[in-house]
Image 1: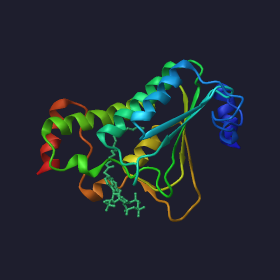
Image 2: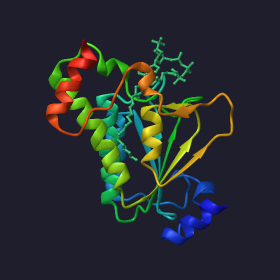
Image 3: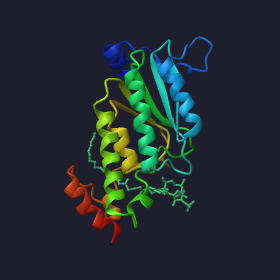
Image 4: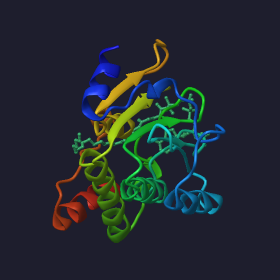
Length: 201
Ligand SMILES: CCCCCCCCCCCC/C=C/CC(=O)SCCNC(=O)CCNC(=O)[C@H](O)C(C)(C)COP(=O)(O)OP(=O)(O)OC[C@H]1O[C@@H](n2cnc3c(N)ncnc32)[C@H](O)[C@@H]1OP(=O)(O)O
């Protein structure tokens, strides 16, 4: 209830969490989002449903098995958010997972092993771009965490204005990446490259 009140106060989004998606017969889809849907045909890691009548988009992560944040995934996520940001009709964004049990397993571990310094730098830049874009979004953003969400998955949810998590004791969330020996690099290219050597050795 507190969340609904906050949303109402921030931008008049009432009852968005119980609204049907854009597949409902009352919604019209903007030109930007038609193009988004076309893109989804070739890049299916992210699905966006926009409800014109509420001004709220639901972005579903659908990259089995665990929605790990690979370079491709992050790129697609950022493009999707950017497109929504450009659509003035879109005022709210809900990020969720279409996979059972997992919201996001965090950064794709395979992106951090045996990659060139250039590739590793590109990857960490994409991580940074993702959280900057999300954190600075003009839209009201909500993470609907419907599964486990460790490390980078937790980071993704922290970039949102609000977080709601399924009440299930089997789902875990938290910044556990240091248990894997991973320390996020600083923002400069020099430090990204430095950290890359740590990652791949
Ligand atoms: C507000 C803004 C602030 C900004 C601050 C900026 C600074 C930020 C600092 C924070 C930085 C954040 C850094 C994060 C680093 C990471 O994210 S490292 C990744 C950490 N992730 C994990 O440790 C998760 C490990 N996975 C799991 O715990 C489980 O897989 C699961 C609970 C997610 C799901 O369990 P289950 O359903 O039982 O599936 P599994 O059989 O375990 O896995 C299936 C399949 O997926 C593969 N997999 C799992 N996780 C990852 C991953 N992260 N990357 C790549 N692949 C992964 C797993 O190996 C299995 O593969 P196979 O089927 O065996 O091939």
